[in-house]
Length: 91
Image (spheres, one colour):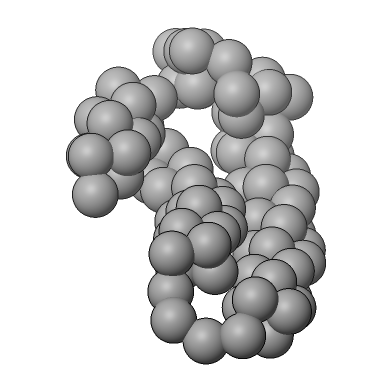
């Protein structure tokens, strides 16, 4: 939860809420790893589920990253979405 609060403040500063979606999708991996290691059940099954969640999370996160960057670049005239100042320079 603390990670998402930090990401939200960062997104507000950049004026780009799409970044929150990217980090939200990547946030499933540490949770799955935690429950895979410390959860009850067979270790192989836990590892398999954690691997599937990682694959899904990574795929979704990369898709959202590409989409958010493409939309941000269109809106701000080729300013990368990861750059600190993502506002348009039109005046």
